[in-house]
Length: 211
Image: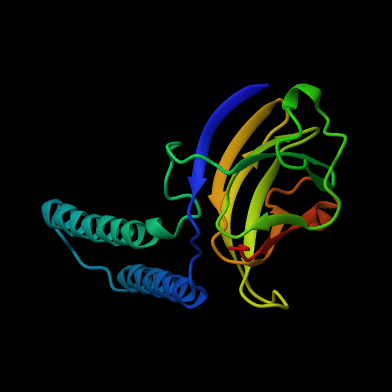
């Protein structure tokens, strides 16, 4: 198998209210722009080619500024803000995806030279809070997407994505994540992979450090 970059994911998630605000603001700006275009088509006016080009240039500058501002504001909320490998993981977990389940090998007990993994960990995968885990992921069949969600409450009625990496057959990708907060985390497939895509879920049980 061919290796790709290791991505270090921070313990971050976009606040739902902030995300809703950004969405509403984007919709409002789009609506204003659409309304302006509709109004201009119903109220045509004679303009010289020079003034029209100047008008279009002003609008282009405004649009570029808006998109640049949105990018700067939201870039820090990506689930993988740091792409470097200078932090050492506590241990490595090999992961394989296939229709329609995840298989997580016990700590440091599997290599991709002996795929498929025969000793998948049963149930919620145990992790100690504070540990940094390097997940090596691959697929046995089609493309998947390894997405880790942190539940906001016990019932997990709301959750935030904290780490994500593409899963492809014939390759392995690696993502490193530090689990700083105890609780239940869910791993979901974020790329449609067939009729059973919605059941491709497993759990990570992060418990408080004994010390």
